[in-house]
Structure formats: structure tokens, C-alpha cells
Image (cartoon, rainbow, N blue to C red; front, side, top):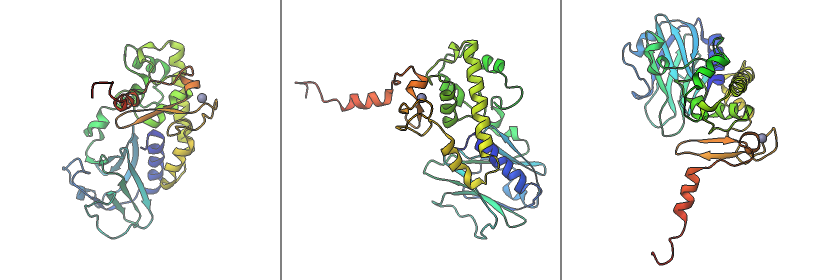
Length: 296
Ligand SMILES: [Zn+2]
């Protein structure tokens, strides 16, 4: 899933390439993709894109008085083309979800792989009309996101830090990948309770959030949309690296799996060398255990 650094790079790319251009047409491949109905997508035709902003993981194209806002979700991506095909967007099994064509023939497709369709497009008069934007927590790279602000966020919250970091209502833009990276950089267990942080630990976590995101933004900056996905993968140190050596200490990166996601961490760097309990794994092992004698 594209997170803050990748979406920021897409915003910069679109700002440079699409701003000032007039929209020739915008089409959604299905009713499910477009979450709003008033104004209709046809209202975009003839409007110039004047600004491109990012709110958390949402992209926001200002077009006249309207805002075209979209969220790429887990398996979505933006594919820029200098020469968009003339063929209409057809509903069906293709990953194509949305297409925007500019007056110079260039434009972009939003695509989504897999069967779970979560990519969402909104055409609104104000970005806060999008529920996911209205409820976003603070931007972690904004000037007013300080160590004190983070301390206030963590204080009294009896939940695991991994969940806090990726909750968009608490902090905007960090997802499953960068929360793993931040906790690895901070040398902290993903299970550590938010309410347990000392002032020094808050400062360490704060620095890890800012450094990790800034580094990733720097690496992604200037890359074409097509190259962002590869850059994200190569830049990560533990996320998605199960079984590989930790680049800091050489221990083997481990994972904990959940119903629809997994987290990765380094035991030596983050959990005092002890592997974390993996409830799903132990439940599977329990189910596989042969029945006790005589109880068949
Ligand atoms: Zn390590």
C-alpha cells in the first residue's frame, strides 16, 4: 500500500506534470469506485487542475471549485501515461478502476490488483466532505507535530504502539509498512503499550517517525510514479523481509501474522532477543495437534 512518502511523491509528480492542465474526461470503471454522486464526474470536464495536495494517504486535486480526492487502498496504484488510450473504461475484471485524461492527451489510470476492491474516488466541493479526510489525525511531518504532541497522543492509551501508529485517526499517513520501519528504528516492540512510554522513549519514537518518513520522502522524491513501488520495497529494512538478516544486527527478521496482515520485526533490536507470541500461529499448531488417546 502506498503510504505517506509514496503518496507525497505522487502529489509532487502530479503537481509538476498535471497542474495547469484542463481535464478532457474522467471515468470510473464501476459504481463501487466512485463514492459520491453529486456533483457527477462529468462536471470535471473542462476544469483546470490548479493544485495537488496530500492529506494522510489521500490525494486531492483541486479542479475549479471541486476536489477530486482519491485513496489508493492496499492494492491500488496510479499509472501515469503520456499518451492515454482512446478506449472507454469498461467495467469488468480488469484492474482499471478510474481514468483521467488531460487536454494534452496525457493522464493517469488508477488500478487495483486483487479481488478486494477498496480503492475509493470522491468528487466533492470541500476535501473534508470525504469522511476519511475529515477524521485524519495530525500530519507527522508538519511543524506542529512535536515530541510533546506525540506524548499527548500516547498518554493514557492502553493499546499497542503498532496499532496506534497505523491508526489514521490518531496520526495521518503511516500504515503497516512504515510503522514496522519506525519501530525497528526506535528499537521498540510493536506490542509495547502506548501508555507505558517514558519521556525519553517518546523522544526516541518521535525521532524515529520523523527520520524514517523524511528519509523515505527524500528517496521517493523525483521518481516517476512507475518507479515508486520498487523504491519503497528496496528502502525498507524489516517490513516484508521475513527470514532475511536485519541490516543493523544481522539477526533474522521475524513476523507475526494476523487475519489479514502481518508485521515484521527484529528480535535482537526490538524485543530483547525474544520472539513475540504469534497467537494465530499457535492456534494453528493447536488445531493440528492429534487428539488425546482414547478420545477418538
Ligand atoms: Zn536487528
